[in-house]
Image 1: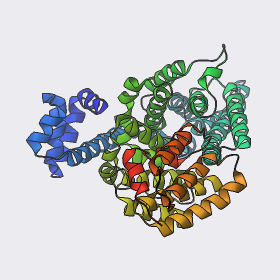
Image 2: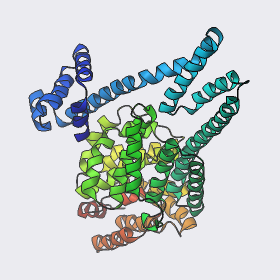
Image 3: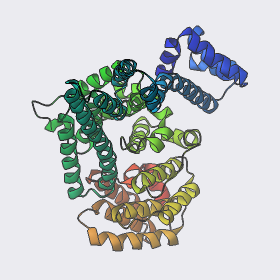
Image 4: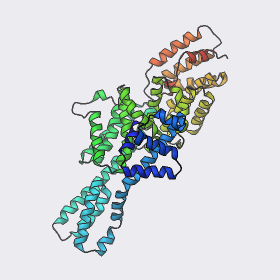
Length: 482
């Protein structure tokens, strides 16, 4: 929220008036009032809600839409000069075939400078190819040939880095659901390949791509404590990336990648449990979570935010707020069952949010849909985790028959991978005690197993870790009868 207020205050008078007029003309008077409140009156959220007679959820939705409206406007303004130079490149042959050589060369040199400012390597190759051709009888031919060759190679390096980034986060998703050590080693090798590519050129773009992978790798694959003495700290990387973004304010890719680095900063402070600092980034990332989930899987593992969000709300004791909030946050999200890791985390997150407000029928529906829609062939542990969570949900619904069916299935399959499924076997034991005929000391036995479960380390995404196993949980389980 603080960031939105700052953006509104930093808008130029012309931009502010244009956005305000657009809101008024589209009959979005309340959004226009909110914009003016941020700009001129510096009203608190509670004061604005009172004056507009809005409930918190409606205010939250309106604020998100205003933020999107401002962002769309700024992107449109940002892309205008970039679009102009791209049009010039597209019409380059018209200049070369109709203008005198001196004028053509002057035009190409001007375009070279503009394209360098935008770091448009692909378009620069077109310009250098033309300059090379026009200097075929000049000593400058060799210089432009070298520039052309270098930018072709650089363009291929940027493309390779971009592809490598997407492949890395796809592979990380597999690793997150399996905890497989081979996948972990593969991620480390991909990071080294990215670092080797980045060393080939003094390129701010390659540095930014490398940084997205490197920071995430240190936080989630290797520990920051393993940092070598000659390596830059994560805070130093953040600082250098921010300076790069400020140096290229009209670059639309950097404009959007700023969200990735806000997410990484949030995760960095979460990693070190500096929660006061992490809160500075939580709200901004949370406002854009649907966009982060749908449009950024090639630049980071965006589903990790949902895991961190669960952890945050459980830590703050505010997990009951999630269910209602989700209806607004994920209003326009597109599910993709083919992206198994992201889809599993998203559906589990929604199911857990339903559990926290005792909406167990909804949780069961979501988890059953997940089991039916996704192929878990590569992810047996994830499938067992979802089944174990579903068994607990049916336990809360007091459906003993379905609990026993799932317990039997989980128990049978978990024994095949027992070295990684110790926590699942503890869930099975908890549910077996809950459904047993013997009523003596059920709560005490379940509590002992819960303590063991909480102390059992897990190296992969484990939805059952997010079940709030409190006194109410034990009380409901012990009410089960066969």
